[in-house]
Length: 255
Ligand code: ADP
Image (tube, rainbow, N blue to C red; front, side, top):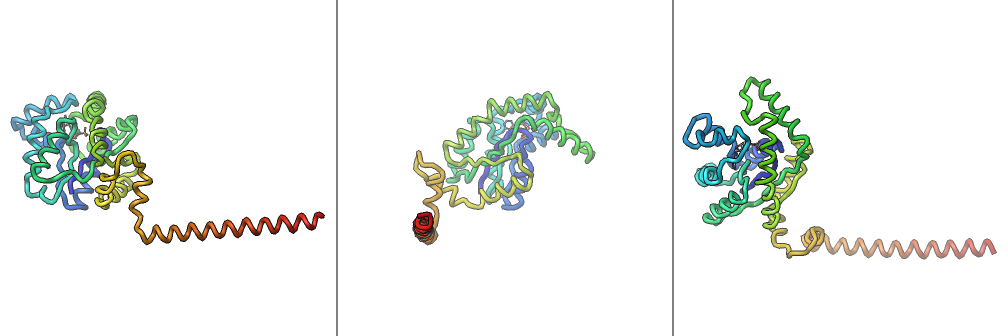
């Protein structure tokens, strides 16, 4: 299973990616974590990325694409992976498609976590408080001013991916404002039905979701649905006849 989690900073991608990784025994690939590790180890990539990340801007595409190209070839990613924080630009998405196509693979789903931007700042503040309470170091970019820049980078460079993946029929949007467990449950249902995802991929253009879904109802159920409809038509006719009889009787009484 190969998934992408899409959403602004603070949307809950990391939490959901971790749960998906454990539930499906797939690798969680977070470019943010990888870059932070590179910064901490002062590798050549880390040195290059440090200031960019502290400003809340995006690290250049070739750098992150090279990291992911190498990472998805590791044995722990063979069963599948959930990408958290990548792709973040259309160029990264196209590079990912090429990397997968070279191996005859494609994405199963791109899950968009939809959140109200106004609450993101509050969520990040909570995260900072929790990190401090655990005695851990706070992320350099978890600062209100830098967060504004990260949100702007998301809006300008990453949000266009929503349309990009919608056009490819792999986009699944989830309400990221619900509780962590509710969001996990919805995502769980979405990824547990790859056949349906594949089916909707083939749905002809112009069809509404409802009509597409109706075509997937098993024949047996469709038949019984027909019978139920016929039965309810019969019941309605009976009701109409009974009312007519009642009306005739009361008319006679009045006369
Ligand atoms: P968040 O989603 O909370 O903003 P991440 O941990 O995913 O944070 O990323 C932190 C920073 O790492 C980003 O602001 C950016 O500078 C850099 N980064 C992570 N992933 C990418 C990427 N795919 N492309 C460019 N920069 C990235």
